[in-house]
Amino acid sequence: MRSDLDWPLWKHNRRIDAVTPMDEAVRRVLAEYEGRIAAERRLTQAVDLKQFIARRDEFLLPIGPDTAQVLNILIKSAMARSILEVGTSYGYSTLWLADAARHTDGRVVSLELADYKARYAREALARAGLADRVTIHVGSALATLPELQGPFDFVLIDLWKDLYVDCLDLIYPKLAPGAFVVADNMILPEEVRADAENYRRRIRQLEFDSVLLPIGSGIELSRRR
Image (spheres, rainbow, N blue to C red):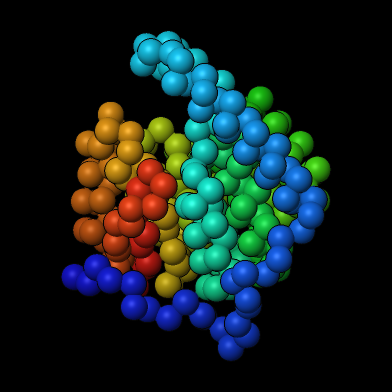
């Protein structure tokens, strides 16, 4: 089984510049997020693990900026138009996906369990001028995924890690040929390493080329054959 990424990233004759300048409204909203991320980082360093777990729904817990930029570039380069995000949280990654979707004339479908997080994300997307690119479904991902039509060209999985494998199995039949699937938190935090390894083992049982990349908290980047 291949584990390299030597496949072509361009599915169409029209290639898009992966470093297309970001809209100023998007930059402003990202700056808001980054300010909150910095404040939360200081706070999490000041509390113990038990306190953090009790308060974790307060925190963004986003993919890092390096990971976000990789996903943004990959979507643009692959001309992915149908994008699925499993785990909106407060919308930081959603904003990056939506920015890429605007350049590919695509759309993002995002799933979030908590209504207040989805509301925060929608407000941020509206301020960035990207609300028309995203549909957020509120509810259990395991209940929502079977209702989605697909096919999807690009998927980001970033919710509670013990749900990764079940979500993957529901997503797999809805993937377009050559679709990319990215799973976050494959290396950190260590507390979820067993769930990450279960996911990595499962995706290698399916028709994917897949590789672990030490970007941010570690991502598994996979492409359906």
